[in-house]
Length: 379
Image (cartoon, rainbow, N blue to C red; front, side):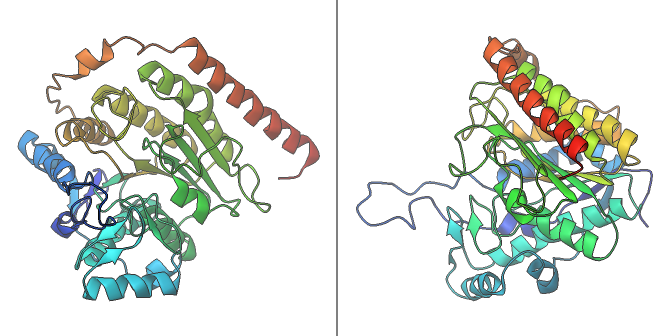
């Protein structure tokens, strides 16, 4: 029986069995790219789960292993043609699900299980069975689009979960915050014309994908200002993220008045990540989690779900994840992060003038437009 007072933790070994193959295997002949292990490996996630075991934190969590997402659940977001192609590849030799999304036989089983974790986590919190939740998903999902995979992602874990919860009447207005270092294009595309879902993405400008993530992208004709992007310049550290969160991200979500907050929780904005150029430490992720918990208490009775996304440092992701989960669970269990203080002491961790100017300009443009919307009565 679930413990409604505990943080729910969703995971499944099946998710760790997804195999992308080696980088270079699907490249054109003669490209001089020697095959190497893929960046998105199971180890960072498995090591996080193992660290929870060793520290004892997992014993304070409500551990749940739900079933995989059904075809019906997936089809609320993904096209039938795309799902048919994935199923054919899964039963055959695998292939490329889209841009930078290779997979092998059995990968769809892992992806359906991953989506099932997100689905169950959202349902548990939306229906009041858990106060908050963390889903240790793999493969990630925030780049997947309706008709293709992208950026290591096969299925849109968060869109699938949110669309199901809303279809079943479990929740109405939802805010999705993506703090992965890469733009959350999947959520943005899924809810582009939906005024009852606010998608917020704080990410490294000009990283992946290159064709999305600008501040000016603010929702479709039927849902203007339902999408907020903060493309931070490379090199942002704790001060810049703190200012962006306090100055714009949290106020924007609070003004939206969601009934549930979902976080696309990537740890690739950490200073040790090979695919990002940001400077966060484990303490920064704990701080952002703490601020979101306080916001959730104010606006939606504490209903908060974190869904694991990117993060490619096998050594440092577990420390960031443990700090995040301990904060989410209100646990007194603390582990030593020998790099936390070192990273915090690096130069340029303080908010820099160009970073402040950028975020403050976004704040002015976002809230001035909101004031204009209030005056005209139009969205």
